[in-house]
Amino acid sequence: MTTRDDDRQVDVVTLVNEIQGHLLLAATRQEGHEAAARLTARLDWLTSHQRADLERQFAAEHLALARTSWQRTAARSAELRAEYEARYRRLKVRLTAACLALAATTVPLTLLLLAPLRR
Image (cartoon, rainbow, N blue to C red; front, side):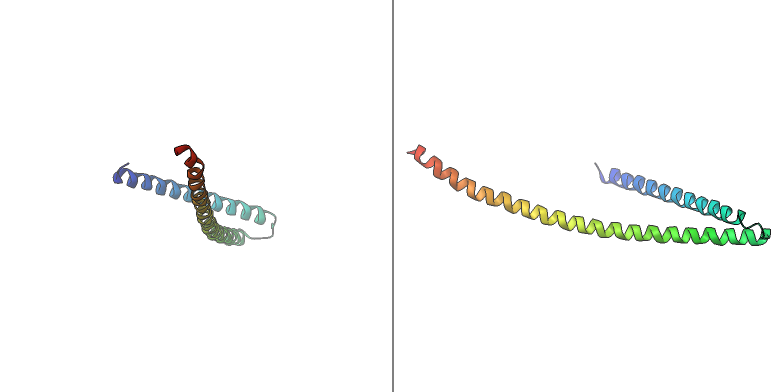
């Protein structure tokens, strides 16, 4: 794969991520508006102006809470990734050490066992 292909692949991944983010944001906004409408429908004493203002504020708060939740999720995801990468590196070092120890014991033992056959 050439650098140009890599750049295109990165661009496609970026585009897909942006589309997913846009769709998630649009869905969350819609959920906020629907929840606000359900809330204000029960408050039949509100004027239309009060109802619209409450729906707007509720939807904005819903979006802010969702954004905070996404940020916390992203931060936790980064923490977990770092933890798993560190654990993977430690396991890789241990496995390499075990393989080297096995090789270090196997080669001399093989030579010792084969020594009588060489005479």
